[in-house]
Length: 92
Image (cartoon, rainbow, N blue to C red; front, top):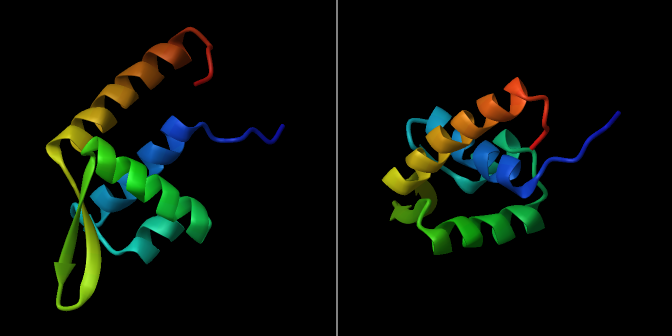
C-alpha cells in the first residue's frame, strides 16, 4: 500500500535534510532531501520559519536555512513519539 506522509513527517524530513548538511542547507538540498515539489517546499519553509524551527541566512548572495535549537528539539521529540507509536503499532 502506498501511504502518504503526514505533515509532521514532511517537517521532520526537511529538518533532517538540513541536519544532514551540518545544520545549514540550500533550498534545493532541502527540496531533494525531503522529496518535495517547489510549491510545497516554499509553503513548508514559511511554516517552519514562522514556528522558529529554522532560520533563513543570506551568505554571498545565496539563501540558506539553518536548523534552530527548537527544530532540533522537535526532531528529538518526534523520534520519541515515533518509537512509542511503533511499539504499539499505531502509524503517525
